[in-house]
Image (cartoon, rainbow, N blue to C red; front, side, top):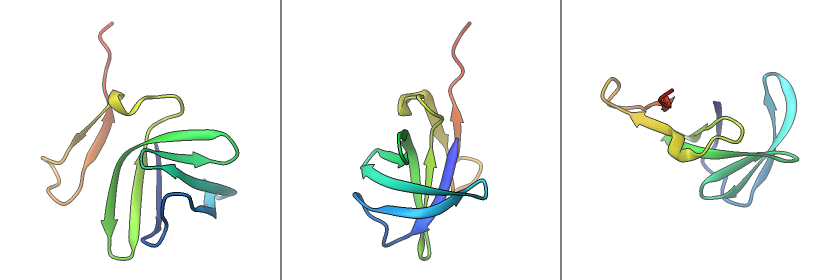
Length: 89
């Protein structure tokens, strides 16, 4: 999973400099369902949550479809738990 917080002013089409795991990076909000870790690592947005002046993006793993995740807010009414669905073996 990839989780990043951005200012509420961050919008579709914006690219910003940031840090990912303490390393310099750039992230683009490509469309309503995708953040891209530049230059070519698109991540499906599983969920977003706004808290004060920040929007928190919960994105899937590389090359994992949004449909492969489930969201559950039953444990934390003000938040969500996002987990990858387990495929039957």
